[in-house]
Structure formats: structure tokens, C-alpha cells
Length: 225
Image 1 (cartoon, rainbow, N blue to C red):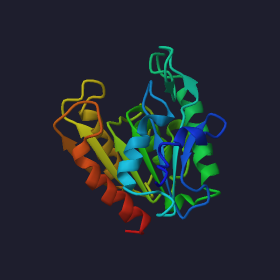
Image 2 (cartoon, rainbow, N blue to C red):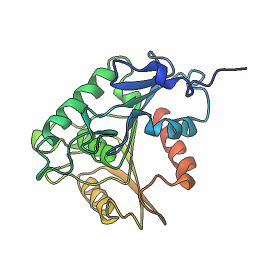
Image 3 (cartoon, one colour):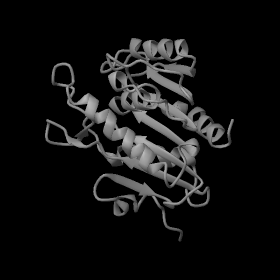
């Protein structure tokens, strides 16, 4: 009976900072960024649905990054503390995530890497890939970027995004206002980015009805559109 690579994902931790599925040296990669209070394993099931096969057979590496800070509630992790006024940990969180993505790019080029984030992870993905706020950096040339239920950071300024971007957001989201994705779309389009936004009737979640759409988006990015 074949082994399910996702069933063994937690055995593949790399110094507690990430969960790896599939080969480290691969042709393509999917990087997952979890939300506030979750952990690296939170999006692995979604990753499995999105690739719909053994990642080794696709020559695909899946990496779920773990946020660096413990959540103040005692469970889960956070990229920065949302409860601190003006989010003082955000600049360092940006720098750290950018360095982690650049380091991953040494084994699989970022041009062959798709990035997917949810909630706080989506905000981090959008920010680091397209702007970096006051620490303005060159946009990352990714194969694709999906941001689910994300929001713009206050000082974020996108500068010529170098990847196609898909935004998804529930119209009844009680955690991150639906208008946040509208603001993201407007700013990204205004900076010349290729962006598509999909609304769905629902709350703070990743809509299962969009799995096929997200899968097609990722495959198009890996195939060079």
C-alpha cells in the first residue's frame, strides 16, 4: 500500500521551523504561510488538495513555514503580535520571511515557486512579495501568489509586482473585513500588478468551492502561464 506523504509530514520538520513534503530538490515548490494562532501543519491538507497527487510524482516540493513567534494565547504561532499597538514586530517579521524565501530559492528558484497564505499569512505573503513597507525591497519574481482572507499592512506600498496574484475573501468575514481584499486589489492593480479577486459567500475561511480554481492558478504559474 503506498505511503501517504502528508501522513508523515510532521516527521519531516526542519529544526522546528517548517514542515516539508516531497523532495527537497524539486522542479517546483509550493510554500504555505499559516494564519494568526495556527501552526505550520494548518494548511498541509489544503496543499494536498491543491496538488491532488503525490508531490514526488509531480517533482514538487511543499513547504509549510512556521511563524517565528508564539501566540499570546499559549497555542499556535504568529508572524507578529496583532495585539500590540502599531505592530512593532512587523518590520522584523518582513525581513525574516524575505530571507527565508530567498534561502528556499537556492534549492528551487523563486520563479518556480508559488506562495499561498491565509489571513495574517496572506498579509505577510502579499507584503513581502510585492513591497515590504518602509523597508521597500525589490518584488519577488514568483510563479504565482494566492492570498486568502488577507489584508494590507498600514505602510505597505506595492511596487511593480512580478507575479500573478489571486485574492479570495468571504463576503461575511467577521475577522478580516471583506473591504480589505478590495483595498489589496486596488493597490496591486494601481502598481501594475496582474491581480484577480474572487469573493464568495462565507466567513473567515478558504472556500472549498475554490480549490479547483486555485489549483488551476498554481499549475498555470508552474507551467509559465
